Image 1 (tube, helix red, strand yellow):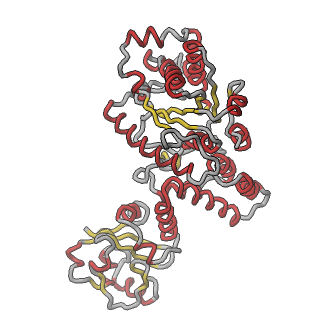
Image 2 (cartoon, helix red, strand yellow; image 1 turned 60 degrees about the horizontal axis):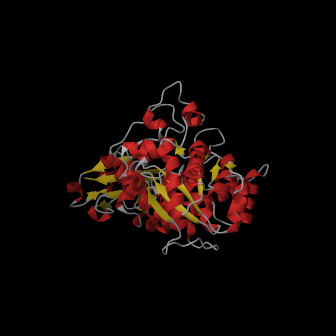
Image 3 (cartoon, helix red, strand yellow; image 1 turned 90 degrees about the horizontal axis):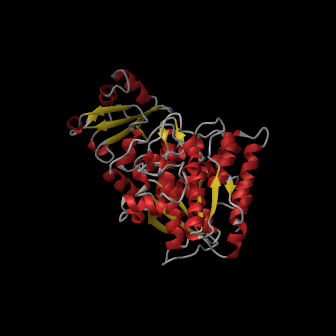
Length: 438
């Protein structure tokens, strides 16, 4: 596929340097995107750039991931209105390793089943580089002489990342960031044969600084491509929910919450999300966009489109097991789940339900010999009294772990516990509780 044309129909092209179309048509090329390890996980906001690398590979080119083992210690001023708080080297190194494992998994998932084979290097369809390797043996004098001499102060002052901070202030540390990013491109061009750098539109200044490094120091020709910064229809930042960032780590954002993010997204945002993130055919994507954009579209049809997007992305990010868990939890919370769905959940997911459902605690010692169900319901305050519990049981309203209980003489015991700790209790169709036994 034509990479630039692909970005154009998806609405993912913001800026590019002249001559890049011809450059890409001549031979398979290498492009890189940099990721600084300032957080313990990649977010869904970063996934825009991962999609760029994925589409690059699907177009038959070779993507390179550059992790900022060095630049992460400085802090990118782009898009910031004040100085970043520097993190410890130990934290940054831990973040980098975690993100590296994530990136290997995410890129592999995006390339799985691709018709167009990406360029392989040493058996891999992409490369991972740490820019700390470019600087670990360089002293301050070498940096100032070999790197700092490349760009003039007046050139660096024209960049938005600098101009936007002149009033609030910027340290020399953050001012030097574009020198590091520019030198990164020079090193990758020279050592890895990388000729293209990609990123978000807020990175244009840093990226073109890199093309200047290649031109001035290596007398080479390098190219740049950027994507628009993705925002929601209401103008708010993409990648956040009411609870905060949407992380691509299941321990930080559960597969259920990730799945629900897409289902709960504003209808107006869905066509953009489809074009940015779906790897289905162009015809399928545009057909789903047309459903959303149709005047008077049916609520059910819109939800079907959202569900297809949520399922595709949850499976790609969290795997088939993660998608299955997300669907099971969704069904359980909205009344469609069965006993098998509940039993299939692991202890971590059941504990997560404790933050979503009303939760009651009960003593494990009390369950040892079995407890009358009416006493149990009243004791956990799910029902106000034994008499209310009795009426609910007789009215076929009570369910234990998704199975109805109609015998007022029934008991509950440790045998009813899931993972020796959890029990779901239902009172009618809409009231659900999680009992945690301690």
